[in-house]
Length: 149
Image (cartoon, rainbow, N blue to C red; front, top):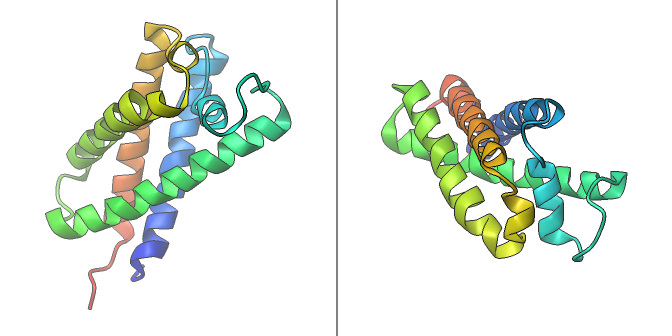
């Protein structure tokens, strides 16, 4: 794919799907208390809104997708700067950095911390989900990006 934005949208969407799959796995297993969809909804909806309703979940999913797309586009530009070697390592680092800055810092500005981080297991599950995002997004971006002509 030659278009950087298009490649980034695909990489971000597939990375976001991987992140959501891992996150839901932990949530449905009872390990994580919330999903990133719940926390994304909480960031935008009025305080006290029920986060488990279809409209809230749809809002959270839209936010999650838009953030994943933005991060996918950034991933494509990063690969243009750093090359397409060691995609697995770059993916782990990228996913870890999105966890630290996104979940660790930015989310705390928008979501009450007791909701965002109810326990260690939820935070660990969020880390695993972000690592899945980074690995998938960087692999897709590196595999399908064609150098600019």
